[in-house]
Amino acid sequence: MRRFPFLGHLKQSAIAGLSALALFSLCAVAMSATPSYVQGNYAVPQTTESTIPVPYTAVQTAGNLNVVIVGWNDSTAYVSSVTDSKGNKYQLAVGPMVTGSISQSIYYAKNISAAAASENVVTVTFSTTAQYPDIRILEYSGIDPLNSVDTAVGATGDSQTSTSGAVNTTNATDLLVGANTTQSETTGSGDGFTQRLLTVPDGDIAEDELVTTIGSYSATAPLNGQSGWVMQMVAFRAATAPTPTPTPTPAPSALSYVQGNYAVPQTPKTTVTVPYTAVQKQGDLNVIIVGWNDSNATVASLQDSKGNDYELAVGPNVVNGVLSQLIYYAKNISAADAGANVVTLTFNGAANSADIRILEYSGVDPVNPLDTAVGATGNSATSSSGHGSTTNARDLLVGANTQVAATTGAGNGFTARMLTNSDGDIAEDEIVTAPGSYSADAPLNNANWWAMQMVAFRAASSTPNPTPSPTPKPTPTPSPTPNPSPTPSPTPTPTPTPKPTPTTSPTPVESVTLDWDANPSTGDPGTNTVGYRIHLGLSSGDYTQTTTLGNVTTVTLSNLVSGTTYYYVVTAYNSAGLDSAPSNEVSYTAP
Image (cartoon, rainbow, N blue to C red; front, top):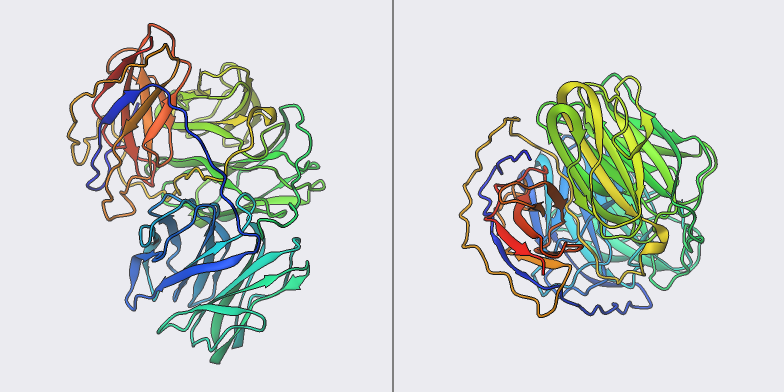
């Protein structure tokens, strides 16, 4: 497996120990019946900055909603990442809205983790230094923890009143959050709204309003003079509101491929659109594979005409200077007529030879579809994702590559769903009916650079209702700089700790739990640890299976064979998907 050094002072901790599988009790979070404002804070540095931290100064409650408003006074910089100390996952709600001199986006994290006062610090990172960044953070209770966003709208203008424009809500009870970034100063909240933050000295507002009927709404805010502005509004669903379409979910259907399409512009493009040409069924799964032939561009946004919520499944896997790939998914999608749902992928700049593949599947778990995911890069005549361990009795495996040569067909056991013309990149799938170690492969017509990924999605009948506790995933900020080389040297060299002694289970088990120390922050979002990978082998030093995890420090591995000795190391990876050097090795023999 290829390893790259971190570009900073990343300490790789060793695996701390092994123990028998433990049982944990999970408690549901009681949600407020009415959406309520909890707290807010802001940071307005008056110099150009590329990284801005803002703490939540009061206690945070598990299951609440975080809202992060990001404004800045230029159109050159863009947001690379929004993260926080608790590993909550931030998604783009609206934006970026950009004029010639100001920009704004609004992000949110649903179903957040609990945090002590000032323990959770939000960090916004730009692609370069941004002029007068204005970062506002808010917390709300009583918001739907699974499907938070109802709708969103935004606009730009030059006048004495900033306005988001109007949009129709679909929910009986919604929280409307409005915000602006202006070249003058805001003098107060708009009609019906309550001012929560008015930044000093920038004069940008964050305001909200609770509405209890479906209708057309907008957010406005008066200014102290005519000037340029950006204004946005996001409508968040109340936790107790009737579940909107696309839920309630239909009865599970057979796990199967429904349709696919692709776009492969042969000139550099910033925006690529791909329609679903057939009817889409409510509750199905959309999968979006994004490949391109450079390592400079990054994905700025992914959305579709029906407002489905897309999440990152795996990636970015990057070969520096050559190619990049990610896979996204949208669960429990809304119904759409043939040709009515168009996927729009936007890069931060023109991407070379973008290859966008879209697929729809039925019969996938509509609440918690992602089982596991894995990805790898290499230079050979066969592209391979590496191995990932599934935990589910019945999974759909979706594999895809982006490569410099041409793919000649599907891997063993997989069915080719599309082979893009003229790029020669594949999308393939396989249904498996037992937990185990799986990988996706695809042969090429000659040895060359490739990235290959595989995502395992759970069948609809295989997952119980989840608890409200979120499972954080890293936010991708692909900005790799190391050149591919066969033997890169880690920087710095991690210091292995002594090999731990596994605890002995009192009874035979088929699972083992690995845990390790978390890496401290480096102070640089580009090199901070955003997740870990477990590498497993059946002989010392030979690791044939890799499982990519989020920012967690423990994992339980199942289906161990009695009498077999397993060898493990752990690596940390940064926001570009690059691995540190491995920890010291530990071994465990299944009883």
